[in-house]
Picture 1 (cartoon, rainbow, N blue to C red):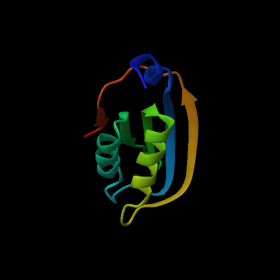
Picture 2: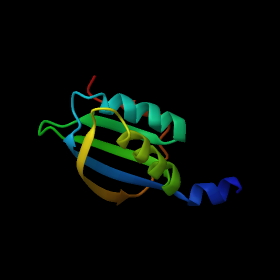
Picture 3: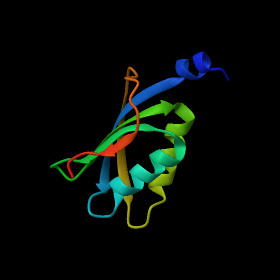
Length: 98
């Protein structure tokens, strides 16, 4: 796949996770999973106990990252709300609110 083809397959998703997702290493697991699968964006805790994320990459890389996060010890995702956004061309993945 050349660079133009790869760029055309990049998507961005806004994702909110509900369940036991705070105080269990969720954001760090998300950070390392994003690094492993080449996903950029950010993750942060929300005041209502959920975790919010924006992830940019290919559909496959984002799906792989989400699967890796869900396998974390103590993490229990009960609901995920996803909205597709236009790609921003972001670089790197960060934990917000540290």
